[in-house]
Length: 470
Image (cartoon, rainbow, N blue to C red; front, top):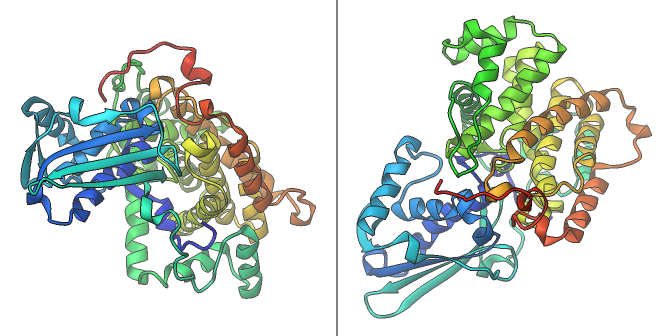
């Protein structure tokens, strides 16, 4: 992965929960399969889907079967109306029929045509295969792998050649620092030059604004929605109650005024921590309820970066337009982890999700607080160092326990890491970011499969639960 051309927007995708690898990836795979049909949609008579490895073991809790159906229906995770998804799925289930891309109806029973297998496909634990029976009595089959963060690859792509290099090639943190030293700029300045080789400045600005808007909308919805999360664990939403308790007079305000009221309330240290945790919980409660989130770098870790972004905006008196530098820096740190290790919990455990998100947020906050490029990468290293070895053991295969609370801890650790890095003389650092990325990957390879999003170890086997439909 070291030479692959990645954008910060590959780390910050807009989509639907609860999982980037188990929901968004299969959703995109379904869309891609239909697009690759050699004779188009009208040629399809029957269609079946096979889920393997982690996609099978925790697929029901993560809504993998649901995501596949939505992709086949032609819905898009970035633009779909999330309020209508349940009714679309109900129609498929009741009618035993699916309308591919909204235009070609075929018989389809989700309980019979989506098969969960105990085995896994080669290359990656998250494997999915689609088979279409065509009018000419032939079959068209394709297999895909959901490799984390909403990324998918096909069988014929796993050994693909490196993409065209960026103007300022970056594979390691050392590369980032070398470019900054030569140019005398910040990390976000260097990364922006690479982004400008892929899209114009207006598009970059628009995309960053949309990512920020989506993050804040998600926080707001989560802080204003009560009830119980779907899936069978009966997990009660907490963010809304916390937000109302912390600032009852602002509960009914629209988004902008609500945020301003929080900033103007000048919370003490304890209240500030409660707000940061509340923001993180809000996002991942929305994520668990099939809400719209930004993968950062995954859905399961989506609450960390917006929580720390709002901490900087509301409680640090920073320029509100600094979100662009914040997101660009965070995205680049995520790219380093994807290239040097993994952002897939099925490969690396939760260190690959919450750990990476915390490192991204720590680095981004440090840049906003005036840290040098060296201090920025030190912040990322500190944050990941204290997530090394974190397992992924979701109870019932649901992204709820312990996942939602881990986002709050990841956000607080990021803030702490930024503070420690800003007080650190870079020359005194003994562990580099590149070293901790290598260590994370070595740790992932040595970790038992039971702790890699299989729900076969850890907390997942301590509590019995009957998983219901998401």
